[in-house]
Amino acid sequence: MIPVSDIQKMIVSLGKPIVDLAFQEMLSTRIPSPTASRALKRFAKRWKDYSRSALMVLCCEAVGGDPSLVYPAAKCLVLSGGAFDLHDDIVDQSYVRTNKKKKTTLGIFGEEVTLILGDALLIEGISKLVDLSEHMDPHKVRLIVKAVKDGLFELGSAEVEELKLVRNLDVTPSRYLRIVNMKAADVEAYARVGAMIGGGTPQEIDALGKFGRCLGSIAILRDDIEDTFNDEAELFSRITKESLPLPVIYALSSPALKKKIESCSKSCSNSEIPEILSLIEKSEGFEKTKRKIESLVLNSKTALNNVRNPSRLLSLFKT
Image 1 (cartoon, rainbow, N blue to C red):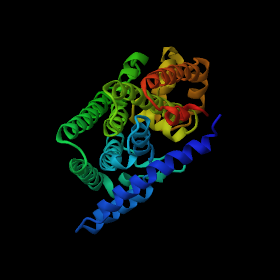
Image 2 (cartoon, one colour):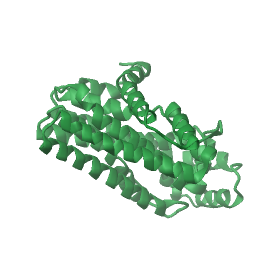
Image 3 (cartoon, helix red, strand yellow):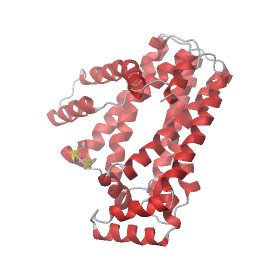
Image 4 (cartoon, rainbow, N blue to C red):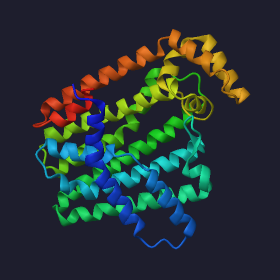
């Protein structure tokens, strides 16, 4: 059994150099606006998502490839991931995050600056794909660009569909899970691109794509559990401004829960959160979400049967 701390160290060691380089290169660009420059520096300092780039390295290694070739595409997806995060905050009106009430970029700089900063990250990220042509033949570059585009387009479509779930108490688990699957499209793209760059066979690329889709869904549902049971501020935000997390959706068959959620939304107070949590637990919202995650983990591992060296990817589940 591998300790969680060792897995986290592996992800940081693989992903941090790519994230740091992506932002260093962007910060070296001339930015005439002092406000824009300050916003970018603050965001870069606080961006700690090393999992995207680490996954690409691991998928490249899993098919016997050279991880250093992943950098241009990984930098693209690091920055575009940051762009989507900023735009999501605008959509969700996330001015602060977590119980510690830490201000987001939106909370400090406002909607206009946050929107423009997100656009800039997306432009800079996509421009990194040009560097792929230095190391790969044009046909492979086109396939990689298509995989990135398809993944980001599907992610964007999922974000649009998720807007229909805001304060929607009639949503079903199956409908929500379809959107979760769509939102995992970018993680599938990371895995596919890592395998393509590593020279994987078509079978390996497809297998790692399926693995990435499952892994992305697992990450979203784990966040749902965290938002529901470990952060009252996030749960209140999900109830009043965002889509409900899966443990809550599973419990919506309870009329008492629906009534409490409606009351919570109208009162603009999180005083009813403890009662809401009690009703979710009675409806086995956690257990049902946990079983869904376990099913996705099994599917992830099964997909890796078709990859020549999956050991480090499998270690992500050995906690």
